[in-house]
Length: 221
Image (cartoon, rainbow, N blue to C red; front, side):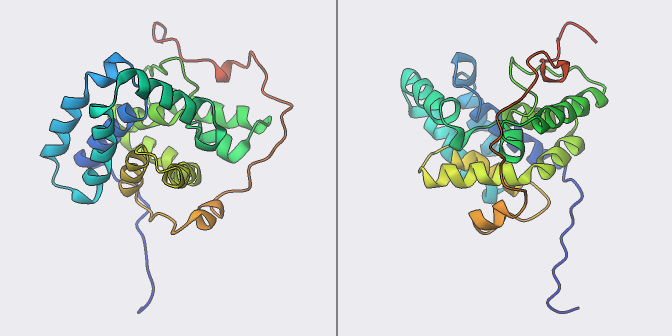
């Protein structure tokens, strides 16, 4: 039928997509020595990909890590992602805020990791931390990982728009990730907001010792 646009929402799991998500995971992680030592590896991997729609955007973030002073990179990362909720990489915050519902959402992430049959090292983060989700989708279970990213697509897009508004080079990594997902990106922030309910402002509660919020112990099955 003319004028009808049909999008295939089945998870994409091409080799190029998994490489892009893994590089994005590293780029969006705290820029410690281990991450910065991977910059040339990331550049080499991007050179091998014939996918300019995503590699150009992602290369902006990689280049930022390559030329930046490590001390400045770490300070700026902390200010951007850890000290400002406007750019937080914890996906459940965008949909649930600081509410009791967030505990359920975090439990869903952790259950998805357990259902994969692999031990997932959360690197000391909560299970909804975007770099963790991206690494899971690249190295463990691409199909399930894409399902998680699509389910929380609004959060991913809102982070992207916030980084674009700030002129941050990290926006390139978000843009690359979104380009690998099966559904199209929303055209603007309002369209992204429409993908999910407004973020609640209730602050009464995550249970501090809820086992769903604890990192998976990599030494135990």
